[in-house]
Image 1 (cartoon, rainbow, N blue to C red):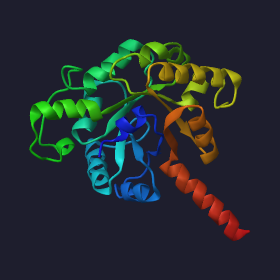
Image 2: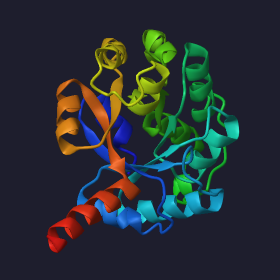
Image 3: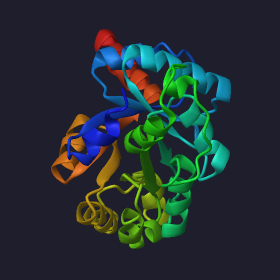
Image 4: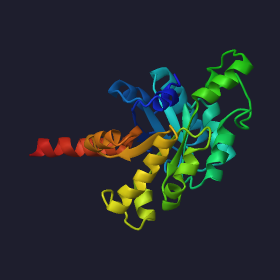
Length: 253
């Protein structure tokens, strides 16, 4: 477990999806069996309680699939609780500048990298006995910190954000980004593509992973060819809706 950060920083693509609506943690097994490398439990647009989040993380550990939790915002409790519950890492929305990125790292990493509070024998240690000194170093090495570029400001500051030690990935939120740029959901608009290029270049220049949300396998392949490494394909509800709609249309035809 907890190989996602290493994989991304080694330049290997990892394919996940967003879980936004499902309430049954057994979906972790479904996604693992399907071949996903990870899933993002959406605590920004989703409505998961801390207890439900904890259930998902426990089941995912048994299923052998890693979980990145998208927090509501860069805030101490929103970052600390998922990590203590066993998340492989975090996806932090609307990170627009170096200061916000530094705050994310500060809350997510143990000293000396950050100021994460120490508690052991919880889900993040599988309730086992660990050597504290060794564990803190290991946790810092394996915990993924991904920040989202969702505004023109974030793209303009992408080089500064990517240079922050402890930030592993800048993940583009294409819907919010296009909306912020005044071209809502026009994903192929030149202004959108030019802005995404800024983010991807900043990641490449700083040996950080670039991430992207996509809605089709074809788009996933295109962005991987452009340098994306953390790929989130669709969402749980979209996969169910799209798959069901296509099947029913064929049956009725």
